[in-house]
Image 1 (tube, rainbow, N blue to C red):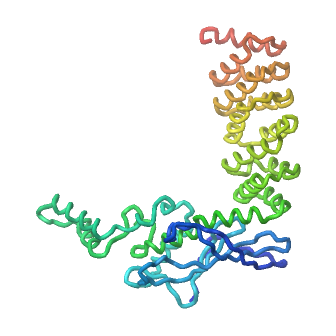
Image 2 (cartoon, rainbow, N blue to C red):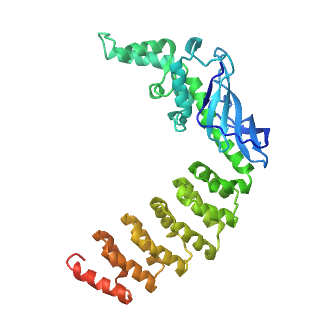
Length: 389
């Protein structure tokens, strides 16, 4: 029976498709050469030539001594390069130590590993997967010297077994199938390592700007992040793409937002177009995002127009964290914002319930030529907190 693991629904559109073989230069920590090697993949394309998904056949383990049971698995990735799942050919099984086939529990553990994009396996080298025989013997001798009565606990017994066969390193036991550590390591890196990244790059370079524009409007964060990365890499600075990206700015990850800010700055070298774009972005919801944008704005050397500074001032009363308020007022101070509308808006913060917030607004307004409304609020504030200022 063919075994199949799909971690997400593969929705294949009904319209015309084309299957195309491509060659990608891929790296894998299991390669003996330690160099990238060319691999064949199949890409499904829609009628417009945009990617729908990718697939590749991969060996279950790299085996130099020819003693392993090597199975060819079919691997599937989404149009974004996200691993979807694997399938085994009819009548085959993954095996572990001494050619024992995976049990139902083994497959469950293997499937959990393959679903995990952030496994510990990303951080370790293949040589760290197994406790070698000589290391295990050394460890056993050390344990016995500390235990002269040779009263073996479970760990001692396990080390003696290691001395005979070698064993999976302790820090990866929980995530791999015991006796199949190399297989788990090999397959995880095929699924989530360089192959996934190279597919992602291929898809971003292959898709049309219209396709990327559609993804920018998606409600799925992964799709919006993917499209932002693509238009930034390809320097697609079309106005319609910028508008779509800004409009959906609240529906992206923090990394995606950082990409968006850098993209808009690169797409608009003229401050006359940059600041209106950033002003629309600043008005979008998302406190963490806004803090990052303000930090980047404070680094700019070009003075923003008054309209942008008024947009900054309009955000003051919405601040939930002191640091955000501090950044907003620092932006106004840096650019010597003194319009009556801005000063009046900031004066409203003097009535804030949090003294530290109101005191920061007071510091901004001090020694400025305030309009009547702001001056009245300022004087009342100084009188109220005369003993604390």
